[in-house]
Amino acid sequence: MLEFAEALGRHPFLQQALLAGLLASGACGVMGAYVVARRISYLAGAIAHSVLGGMGAARYLAVVQGWDWLHPLYGAIAAALAAAFLIGLVTLRASQREDTIIAAIWAVGMAGGILFIAATPGYDVELMSYLFGNILMVTPGDLWLMLALDLVVLAVGFLFYNQLLAVCFDQEFARLRGVNSDLYFLLLLGLTALTVVLLSTVVGVILVIALLTLPAAIATNFCRRLWQIMALGALIAMAFTSGGLALSYGPDLPAGAVIIVLAGAVYLLVALGVWWRGRAKTHPRSSYGVG
Image (cartoon, rainbow, N blue to C red):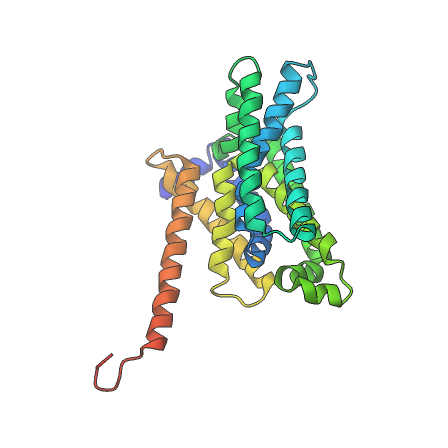
């Protein structure tokens, strides 16, 4: 830890990585609370993998058709928003379960991306780097992008907190109270998609999924209100990113992987603690020491 603190003052790339982790934690803390409350954790994974189709299509058009202006990130954003809209539309209009639609989009998006990559001359490793990212390679431009995302997420979360809260916990009740629950459900999915895509291109798909789900899941064990879960989830995610970077520096380990392992270990410990506490309340020891 001391070695990391000393290096942090000397190396700008470590400062940028730490700031990227903190900014990612802010967006993931807010959106993660909604994702966990609405039970659509697989949505993050589906969107993160389905964007490969959008990036592959953008690369194909740029290389084969000469659309040089078409950046893979544009294709990723378009694919993510389209996937989120399709999930919402089918869920609302076709009365299908979200997990079924999410699984279908996950598979089709990956398959489409592989087909576009195969049809594009050469093998572009850059597309894979968009999927897995590297928190140690973030640039000042990436940080500004993440800051803008944080501001959008916080603004939407603050302005439409009550509506999104109603959609997460009781969509039918919200509809009876005059709330356009379908619109806010689509807004929730779209904002989640945007968060996943923009952050995954910077810090990686797996890390974004972990930061979206694990801190919020831990926070639900200690908080009752959704805004409290958001705040505590963001703080927990910040602790994970900072701690993971510090722990990975000395042994020269992949920072993203260390952050994920740290988050997973803490989540398991908290889950075991909650289970043990519940077991102790259910089966208290008698005064004679017989359980």
